[in-house]
Length: 146
Ligand code: RB5
Image 1 (cartoon, rainbow, N blue to C red):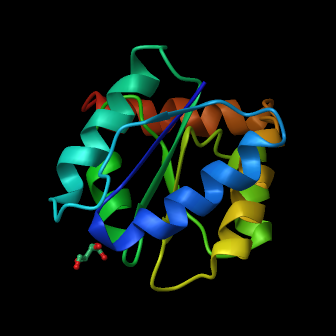
Image 2 (cartoon, rainbow, N blue to C red; image 1 turned 180 degrees about the horizontal axis):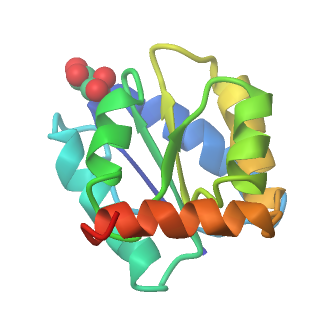
């Protein structure tokens, strides 16, 4: 299950991502918004809680730029959120950063590219090895331990 959420700027892109990837076997838990103006940090927290609780394996967040969502998501303990606008970043943030949330900007990208980036993000595994040590260091920062 993939948690997905957006603010009012991202509603159409969220629908496009869900539609494109549902046909490829992905299941989504939609954490809002359905279109009402809302504050992106609230949605970011709801999606991230689904991921950190283990209810959902990954999360996707969409706002106008993707920036606000990524800032909010990265405040949640255990979340490694990546703002992506290109396929290289979507792939390597999984391979090297083991990102568990991807953020996109609905005023930055087209819906087709967003669906493609989401698919890359959701189908690419973590490489582990030396990258795990670096992720552990991120966790150390989170724990005020570095
Ligand atoms: C909403 O107008 C906009 O500020 C929001 O979607 C997002 O881009 C913030 O980072």
